[in-house]
Length: 387
Length: 56
Image 1 (cartoon, rainbow over the protein chains, first blue to last red):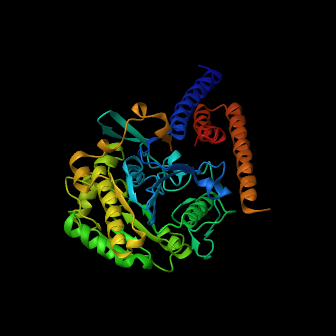
Image 2 (tube, each protein chain N blue to C red):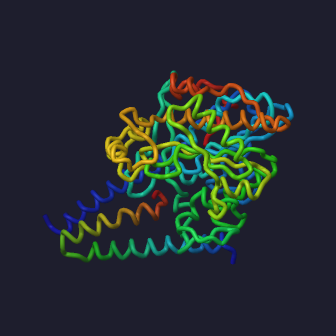
Image 3 (cartoon, helix red, strand yellow):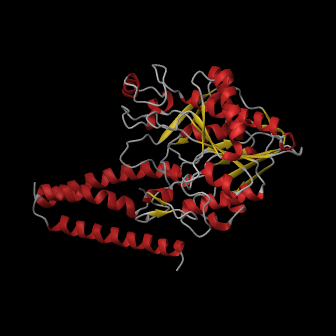
């Protein structure tokens, strides 16, 4: 074989690899997630309706508004801040697809950092998609990264200087939608996204904001509600109620550090009238010491290496052979939100937010999540949206 | 120049840098007489192509 023929073969193989990889990346980046909104939807807006800062950008997320028409408070639920924490957007979507507001208003964003959901973290061999079985078939979501894609926000600064505090943070956190609150209209993509969300919170006069997350078991901020000082009585009572009445593994309550900037639980509370909460639940997929990184681990939350670390008391959350399945993690988030609202309603009855139609912890544990997602193909077109 | 504009300009410049290195790799690929080097250049070109096409 001549060198010229060998080079042609090499080009063909390399080109073939690039084509296959490119098609897989393209499929992931262009996949649209169907959302069948509950029949009680009032309006679907875009984030850019609140601020031009995200207009025509990849992060111009759908904003689902459910208004009971009965005077009360307003709650904003945020999912998808870190799309490598899938239970966050699935918990938000449980509300989007099932909620029936009886008093007050609830506003849901399933995917606040959409860009981060369009590609997975480089070098981690993450699955591109994850699936949930439903009575009508299988529902599919994009798995993502912690930060916005470099295709949408690049380059990063050498050091990210948070606005307005001036605090120095790691360079990649300029793409992290939980390090860029309260944002600024003329910043980079994640900063503009958080600014638009802050405008939503301010213009809708939100009383309660919840940001759903997941965390590795090796991380200390785990199975907890992190709360701005304005919401400490509510979070403390909610954590006690959840631990004593609902959850097998306790949920704690932590104060939002005043000197740590850019996080939703600190900045939303500081820059708006709203009380900001952030909920964390254990996700073994995020642990550095995990084994095979695949959809099975993501959804079952079972990993023998993480279990072994637990045996050596190296973790901040318990884990056994039952793992941390996605439906349990979702059940905890959904129930945490509902309990926070319950306590909020007791303490501020004039700003009550009463929601119906949301499955209980027992419902989600017994039936799984699939029961609570509707078939987009069998639903009226006016109720189907895409994130 | 504001931050969004300067970042956009820098991003476009990165695509020119990517194209420059892709051309340099292609030139070396064509010039080399070593099979091993040719294979290496072929593999290295893949991420540059994917980046230029805005796929990864």
